[in-house]
Amino acid sequence: MPHTRTLSDRYGRVATDLRVSLTDRCNLRCSYCMPPEGLDWLPDDSVLTDDEVVRLVRIGIELLGIREVRFTGGEPLVRRGLVDIVRRTHEIDPSVETSLTTNALGLARVAGALADAGLDRVNVSLDSIRRDTFHAITRRDRLDDVLAGLAAAREAGLGPVKVNAVLMRGQNDDQAPELLRWAMAEGYQLRFIEQMPLDAQHVWNREEMVTADEILERLESAFELRPAAEPRGSAPAELFTVDGGPATVGVIASVTRPFCGDCDRVRLTADGQVRNCLFAREESDLRTALRAGASDDVIAERWVVAMRGKRAGHGIDDPSFLQPDRPMSAIGG
Ligand code: SAM
Image (cartoon, rainbow, N blue to C red; front, side, top):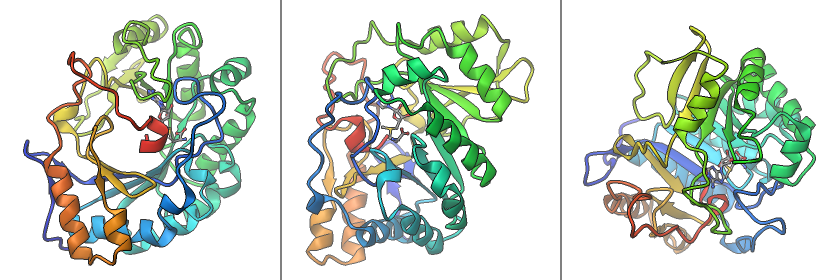
């Protein structure tokens, strides 16, 4: 589909990968993400309707060169219209890749419907395959549901199924090799994500986080890792072959090995704000224009302007770094 504009920034990067948050609500309470009691959720009337989400996605694809759409949250599976939103996105342009980032609670029930609707892949977040550790980190005893969701995704052809894990010191940082062994046996691609300063409680601490170097050290105590030959491109994960391959493991080291120079991502929050970076302190409101009857062209132009302000890097290591007001769950991870 020809598009007349691109989502380019002043540093020559072009965003083609759109992350759409469908809700800020979640049914887990991962300790590094939100407090046990949850958060003050976005008011219902500020959350985009299914039609509004699909319209913005269409503008992104048809007018602005978006080639990948990933639905996230909060927990996207708690959004009632999810399957329909996926189907309508697929119908806009079937060559655009669609995926879902999810905790997999309830995925067993809808994996088939999502695949039928045109979803290509899922990324499932899972920090431990031990029931007690899973319960302690997520504050919910739901490991079996996640494992069932993962298996259903694999059966439904939503692959390659990727599993994302965050290691927390003293909680699961001793479990990296066991997670990798399990993922390889199940045929899932495991990636470890460094803990980022995006928690609602603002307790992230650079000294406490488990770094990429430590993750690799723990894995190398049990496996032989070699940098994978395939070019990384704009992928956030640095890939390593495990014991000669073909299995790989990824490390997403946003904090200690930032990859901002190759970023091709842009985010849309559940309440219709464009964020040009996870760590941006500014966002651009598309919802008001949308609800005021703005044309596709006007909305596209606002989106283009929002990208021009994208900073060269997230600046976590800069002494002036300030954590964004929105936590990860309300931005869309
Ligand atoms: N609920 C969905 C899920 O669990 O995948 C989608 C949203 S969740 C915010 C997306 C990812 O962000 C999960 O893999 C989660 O572990 C990760 N995450 C949340 N807070 C984080 C933090 N402070 N640092 C690093 N990753 C974080």
